[in-house]
Image (tube, rainbow, N blue to C red; front, side):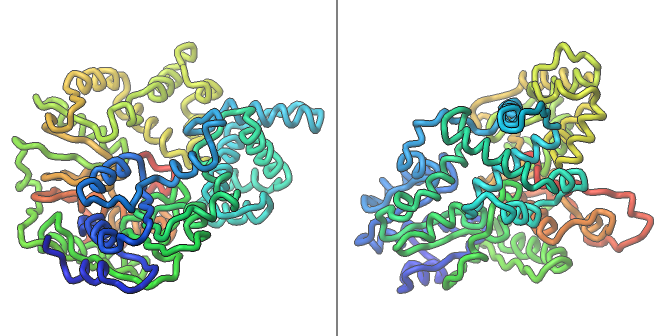
Length: 514
């Protein structure tokens, strides 16, 4: 195996702990496995970002014959060590569950009937997610202050937060109900319990921990790793940090360790790499001192719609589900087999939520199956709620229904007729950027729903520094999935600000549909 000088420098490093900034397609996994091979005297834990990556890595361990190395996700590790099988688990707290706990608490403790608003329930749910992903221990005003700093909150939500005592008491009650198995517990909850139990979490028994996708891990994960008395290697790509809506933290910026770079991508051509870096850096510099440095291989990656061979398989990548549905409608008439990354049912443009919102608009409330949506009198009320709580999932669906009306059922029918469960049989693969992360395709078509220079410069949009950077990162992740050819989304680099353009608005929610 031929390694680059950057890879060799890392593999031969004499530093006990360090971090690696690795651009998309730079062979970071190969580098780490080669490092592990050279350090066979160490007992090593590789923390994978998700289950699918864990499975892939376990196969590679057999190939590399690394018997001294194990692979796990942080949740799997916590699950086994804290015996989380004792809990009834769920991926997300249900609105009805939160409402029931709060109502019972108020009735039992304050002897009064209290019915929380939909906005208040959404706030409590988000605060619990924030706490479980943070390294904070106490449930006090510091939690609320930290939440305010990391969240883009509207006036209505800030008003709800002003009653700190009430908010904190409801959070404590719900967390207590999960701990005592009175309600289902989330996966992030038992990870938090693992973190808090220092007797178990601070002594994992490894000589070295490798942390993958370190730009998108939570503070609670960092807390677990940093509590170990062992060597640590964090590897990731700061330009691929795209999960702030999950309260992710860029450990590469947060942890003070010696740094190495993997700046050459083996996925795409050098001309494309330099062109992409040049274009994105013009926008990064508007908001930060960030500077993308990336090179590629000699084989070219062709740029432009005319270089996409529609007779060969290609992938369509959109920023949002609404952007994706627009592309679907464009291609659905072609006689081609289609596939969705993550499965068709994981996209919010055709599920029970969509049907329920459609029937809400039609005032056919008896056909609504989603309990939360039943509580709204009209689609306008739901839209206002979605805006107040920054719920982009609902806003995307409303936009979809308003745009296509009754045709949503025909669109669904046509999609299902052309669906294939096998990726290798698909002529067109559809995905959002978040679902495409970590994957690659021969040909890519980017939808035109990514951020542009015009949206960045428009003062009416009031895009925060962090949000602007993340949106540019999302563009980078999408563009770097391509190997041979790509039709890129227009960044509108020639745009100059004009006051007449201030009618343009940009959704800056962190609750973005994946």
